Image (cartoon, rainbow, N blue to C red):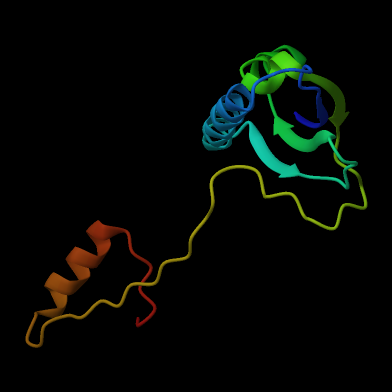
Length: 136
């Protein structure tokens, strides 16, 4: 399932800059991990007022409980409030969904039979391989 999460951060007054820098660095590292795990799909920064910290995040999780675990694992959560909106596909979405199942591939092989090979040997080998030769 996919979610749009509006994340608003409120740093407590008097928090040392070093503490803010540390937690932001840990947040960036955790965001990279969540992206690698397939939970964090995108982040956007909407227009902000001075001193405002707000981010829009596109997340994927199996369900609401897993999303909560993902969001709780992010270091800035101690100063952040999250507004979660579950997303579902829209019938007019211009991005087509991928086909179900594994991808299919068309592969063409060119078979070269050495000159002088007896026709019976070629036919026997061809029959055992189950190939659909195009040349006869």
